[in-house]
Length: 211
Image 1 (cartoon, rainbow, N blue to C red):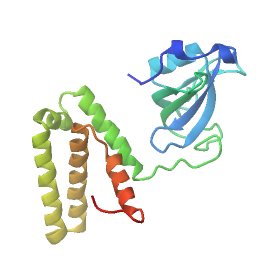
Image 2 (image 1 turned 30 degrees about the vertical axis):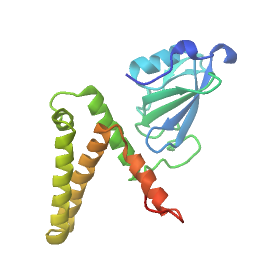
Image 3 (image 1 turned 90 degrees about the vertical axis):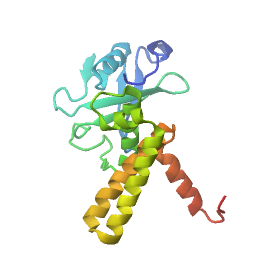
Image 4 (image 1 turned 30 degrees about the horizontal axis):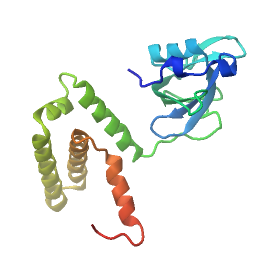
């Protein structure tokens, strides 16, 4: 289910039945485009999982990408403080603009490698919430936090071993295993990798003192 406000909360009447919908990349946070939604476009977006607008020029609904194939996969919809505008977090499948540009402002929407950590954290949190069968991540959560913590220790040791006696390739491989299991551990405790980054950033500030 896509997180979204209740349609009854949205003030469609203020804009004569339409509200502006700002589309933002769910990972890079780059603003991709601006469209307008009526109640039907809002409901269709939730139902299909693809961002759908009301075309003011054609006076009809249109799902972004229905012609080009460059769909916007809806991840979350948020309502602003005045209840008359929507922020749509989405994953773009191809360029967003009809000109072929990544955004309607001609900007490049190149994701940061580090931004993937947020995407991975969200994915792991979803696994924790849904617990699908056959998933290794699900099995870790079912084993409990003690087992997860043990795996973090094991992967940390393997990373150290490869750093001292192995190849760079193996060191990166084991470090990836370690980081993945660390994020699983954080998720199990209701924490996020961004909180670790915030702590590191705080330590980088002048005058920071160890607790």
